[in-house]
Image (cartoon, each protein chain N blue to C red):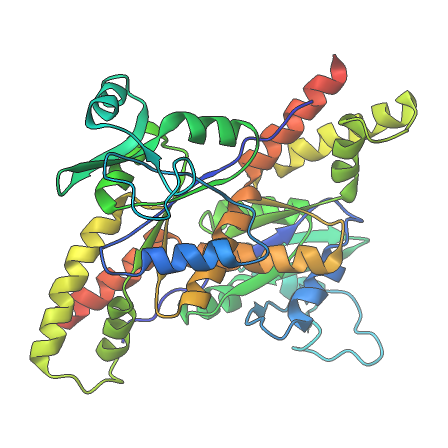
Length: 207
Length: 207
């Protein structure tokens, strides 16, 4: 039997844009069929957290050994602790035909792009970009100072979104969720994916 | 004011696949905001048909003059009459920021691909491809002869879908409609489109 490979979906964006809230909305939605990749961390387990469910908890030493063994898709250090996405779970799950959904920081997304160039990269943009658009086309009443500040911010955000395939503006959580699901659905319908799958089936039928 | 260009959406596929039915479902759906491109023809106007609404009706001579002037995105001759898609309406409408939806034959789609390489090409595939998949992965009970026939058909269809961006299998009209709308929505969220639009806004804000 031929199984179609799943997609690796990466949701990222500037900090404070609401990535966690949107990710939660995606996973809470009944039609969602994504697998969630559990992160690994060296921070202390908190009350109620379970190893292998909330995080994989590792010692500093264990984590650094895994870094040396290239066992992370991406990792970073925050406030003295490591956080990372283990590569094996992601590879195995997409090989089994399931979509894996990662919600990570912009720096981590850059690392993923290098290791999984075929992944689907979605940039969650702040509603200021949408507001900027509204203001600039003349419906707004902001002062020049406010507009200048928005333009500066927008430039910075434009430079960040460079590596991404899609941009979703987070002006409403449920709309953002629905757009992300549409992007994933459309990606599954890309001709190259459908064609590869059918070609494999036909080859197999000849054997 | 900067307006974003609309998309040219081309739905095509083998004859008999149900392109017309799916196109009707797309246009009947309340959320649809596509413009429909009216075809031009040299055939006789039928009872109840109106010029400029059902078709633009032209004489053979007028049509051939327009062909010479390169005024069609695509045209073809069936049973002694010309049918074609006038280029001006499509160009003006997408320049105004509206999406234009064309439902045309495979030969016409090839012509459009040459003139509008950035258009969104969706191949509507017959459910036999989906059925083939089911059979081949062992759930079916078809004879080898039936499977061989399906494989032959599938090969032909695979060779047709080569120029397309997306493939939608028409096993259910409403599902196909929903997938097409998702593809169009996702295309509007492609980073290159969003980025260009925002860049233009920012440039304009500086002037």
